[in-house]
Image (cartoon, rainbow, N blue to C red; front, side, top):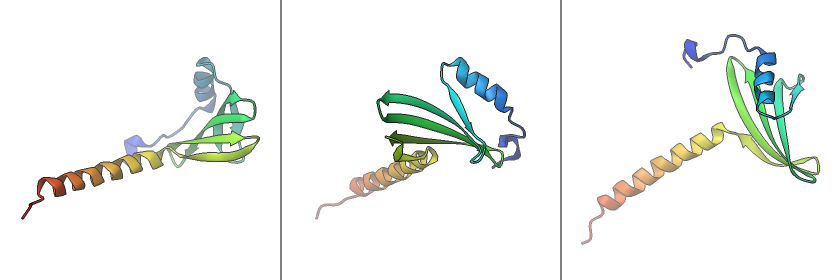
Length: 103
């Protein structure tokens, strides 16, 4: 990571104010060092986004909770890696098909 891409100091009050100005409520987990935004989808079903600040980076993590139990979730970075891998695989398959020779 380049030095200019690292966050030196994050004013959590400003971040919370920005999120709340969009109409969301924010809770803070000081123990785990992240902000949590929750949206109740239906009774017992909650979609949440965690925003973690560590080592000068920001990490977004989503999860779905049903009756207080996490059922799904992962860091958003996983999806960019999966998409990139999927594109590489498609390019490889396309190249194989383009060069396929019928004898």
